[in-house]
Amino acid sequence: MNNEKLIPYLADKLQKDFRLETKNLPVHFDLHQIKEHLKKRINEYLNGDLEKFMNILYMIDVDENRVREIFSSKLPPELLADQLADLIIERQLKKIQTQILYREGKL
Image 1 (cartoon, rainbow, N blue to C red):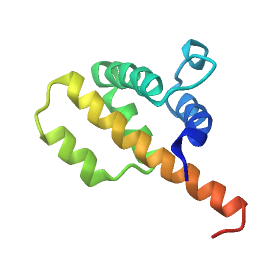
Image 2 (tube, rainbow, N blue to C red):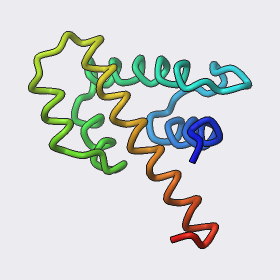
Image 3 (cartoon, helix red, strand yellow):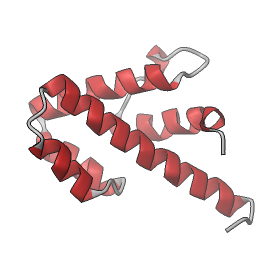
Image 4 (tube, helix red, strand yellow):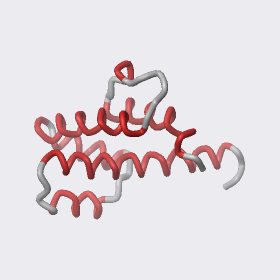
């Protein structure tokens, strides 16, 4: 399934889960721009409410082992947020794809 078609669904999911301000996103969503907004939000959580961030990761069912690997890698904060954003986006895209296939009766 083409990820470009899933971008609006992804933006909606991330907005709900991370309270991203989609009004700041352009009318035509771009994965790079969404990731940049998500990284800013992740940094806010990492610097202010790590427990809440971990709860969100659990809620959206991000692989705990991969999260542990990222946190134990001792990356600088900007790279840590980048890696976490990739992980979150990957998981959300998989969930969206599964939901669409289920709705279409292909599962």
